[in-house]
Image (cartoon, rainbow over all chains, first blue to last red; front, side, top):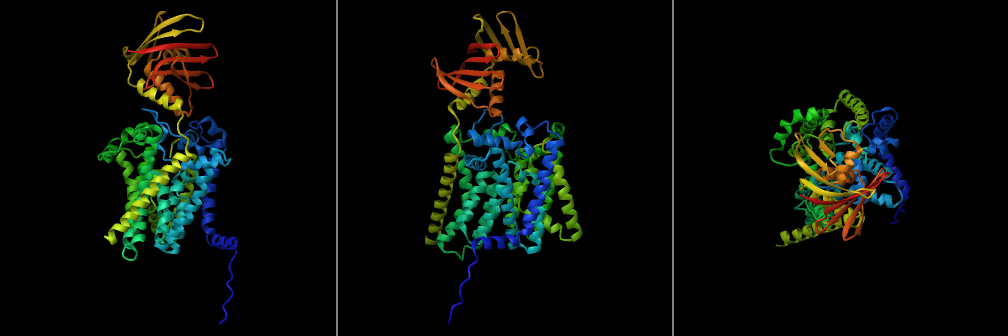
Amino acid sequence: MIDAPLIREPPLASVLAWMRERTAICAWWLGGRAVVLVSAVIVHVAGPRRRLSAIEQKHVLGALQSWDGRWYRIVAADGYLLVPGHQSDPAFFPLFPALLRVMHTLGVGYAVAGLVLANGAFLVALLAFHELTATLFDGGFARRATAYLAIFPFGYVFSMTYPESIVLAAMTLSALAAMRGRWLPAGALAAAAALARPEGVFVALPLVALAWQTRRTLPPIRRGCALGAALAPFAAAAAYPLYLDHVLHNPLAWNRAEQAWGRRFSLLGPVHAIERVGQAFAGNAWVVRDIAATILYVVLLYAAARAGAPRAWIAAGTAIVVLPVFSGAFTSIGRFGLLAVPVYWGLAAIGRRPRIDMTIRALSVALLAAATITIPLVFP
Amino acid sequence: MRTVGIPLLVALALAAAALGLAWSVEAVILPPPARGDLAATAALAVLQHQRGADSTLQLGRGGTLDATCMQGWFPRRGTLLRLSDGAQVLDYAHAHLTTQDVADLEIAGCPHVLDARVAHLLEDGARASSAITDGSLAVRFVTDRSTLTLYLAGRHDVPVGVAISGPRGTVRSRIRFQ
């Protein structure tokens, strides 16, 4: 018998072939980000810029570097500092500023580094999300859900100097790795998600569910790896207070900083949040946007559950959307909910009919552009 | 034992590795806060527990003034500064103060005003340099318009003096909290 010669594709060709298959995803990424970037340029040229700092006003994409972006840049440049009784930077998790600092060391300015990291990670997140969704549902569902994610109205945050796109990429890649039985990368990626945002720890729920489902088929060491992957995000999150204790001599610096930002977690938080709606509205009418987002996310999580999304993912999504209300406010839930992966599955389930699908897409693009233009008026 | 013990040990080892790696990423990549910044935040913690201060102001032209700063109701809630030359400054919410009034409140060591000023500088990303001067730690904030120096003493970095340098010269003070 003569063996057929093994023809290996050159690595670049295989990468190109892989990319060709995902051209549509790249196109959605490009289109969605173009909407955000053009809207940010419009803000720079003709929009309201009063609440942006002088530096942010000068930069053509300054709006995308504003709000928390400034705090992340301060941490990257000077490290953490807890200013007692005042807003300070230990409220911001360390992975994103660490990556900013690495890029800065390589010669990239903090402003550019933030935008490159956020937008680049969002492309990775879209590719991983598509793969994950196609594995859990089907190809058509995955294409629709990915398109909705690319143009989601609150998704302008994925282009800002914020860690959300990195967390979404890490969470979806972690779940994908776990589904393929690669528990060590799954654990490392889950740890990265939790080191970038506290919501990242909730990726542990799907990992635990996967580890439980496969427990009988795995040998003891791999079973340990699966359990270790689910524990990794908690361990990474625990490293943050230890680090704060090391540099600030205060392991509770994160809690203190959160309190100065007006967040105090309590069991009666949702009651306080509802009680204070009137007061919050009087202070800043934009709170209506976050209340609407909370309701929308809950509806979409329900739709995702009806569409057959795994329960562990629904639980993770619910925790991401509902837990912030326990801090006594609806503030920023529109942004926090971006990391609730099943939200996009819920939207894809609603958009099955072509007419509804087209309506969601058109409405999303219009709202994405409008939301980007509001950046100087209200923090995400 | 084998079916439970080995997976548990492996899982705990991986969790420990994740914790160690995450901590190392933070410790290796992010810079630690400077001594001056830590001292400034410690001074803020002291200032937030004070209700008033007595001080001696050393003016640029060589003269001195005594100052007393009190927190209370006058009749509105705020800060009242009395100088030995008879001048006084009342600071309350929404009060319109001149730049000179604010500088007087700061140099006299009025705790709430000084706390707000230093916190505002730190929130804006200003970072302090520090040096040992006459047995106290001098923490210096340089801004576009002026330089604010806090003199801190003791283990808890208690403010014992302030200096403000601007286009019109330098004013220094010694502070004693009430």
